[in-house]
Image (tube, rainbow, N blue to C red; front, side, top):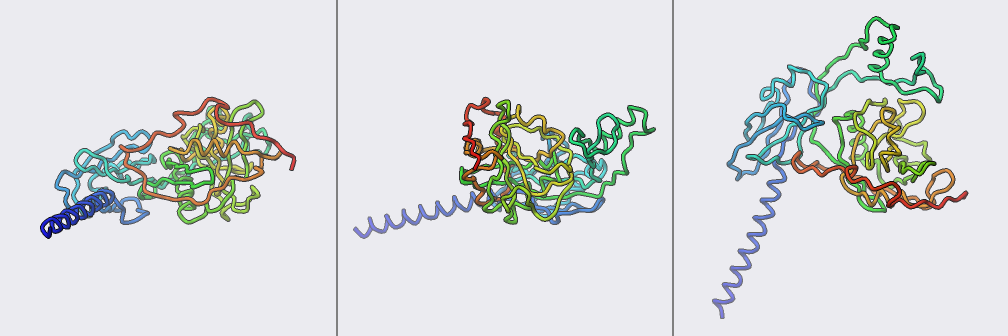
Amino acid sequence: MHTTHALSLELTRVRILLVIFTIASLSSGLRAQLTPDRLYVGVGQRVVVQVNAPDDFLGDLTIKLVNGSTLAPIASAPAAKGRADLTSLFPTIWADKSDQVMLAQLYLDSSATGAPLVLQPMVTPNRAAQVDPNTMKVSQERSATVVFEDDRLATQFAKGEIESPERQEVVYSGLRVYVEQEVVFETTAGEIVFRLRPDAAPNTAYNFMHLAANGFYTNIIFHRIVATTADGRPFVIQVGDPSGTGSGGPGYMIDLEKSTLAHTFGVLSMARSADPDTNGSQVFVCLSKSGTMPLDGRYTAFAQAVSGAQAILDIASVSVDANDRPLDPPMILKAIVRDAPSIADRSAPISTAEPATNEFIKQPAVSDR
């Protein structure tokens, strides 16, 4: 009897130890990644990072530098636990002084582990203006188009209006280095997870991450919902104004940033007024490629939803008044910023499975109230 009881206690103790060991191993694995010493690193200075790996890991550690957009490999170098200088491992960082965002990913043996580091070049921004497409002169007319400095000067050069398409001096100042993040909107319709795209619009993505991480998107309503355009194409849901009026923001504005990300279903983009440089905190989620494709190049797309398609569609289906204001507004309860998965564990954006037009979006009831 006593022997049986003692054996039972011993088995229980072993099970508890196994659970503790498993939890510890999982936690240790989650901590395996790169962390930077500094957020901002001036050109020519050392980019020092901490290489974190489980204490019991005895395999090979490798850091791979990849293109932030295509994930194409740039360079690879062996690493060791502790502090490392990325500029020593990868001289190309300062040698090339590229304006392309790069990612530094840690590998345990052949497995990409932990969130990668974002290496964002700090360069003179490419400014935008509204211009008359015929004269290429700055204009505030509704027919004016948004043209970025590079495009505008190139066009003027092609017309023979200027001798050289050179823009203002572009200065390369260094890098902004941080652990890649993703943002989760906890809404009244469910959770939406966005993968930020600093490769497409680095300053806009970082501004949004800053606002989300510091509580800005807490208890904010979706104040504008345009389920479909006049010709029936799904359009946008808009949020990001704490006042709920559609005119509020964070108390500052950022310039329009030229983005390489197309407006498709689930893409997050900056809302603004007619002035292109009035971006702040208001954002919209695209409901279809057909409806929002005309926004490409005129608005800054900077993130893609990787989950939460049904939540987006449910928000889009609520009843609105004649001014596209929801009668019972859905809400972002809070935003969570968390480390992104490794480059090997990324989920595909929901835009790859865009629903057919109006397949899920109900035509909202319209009220004059």
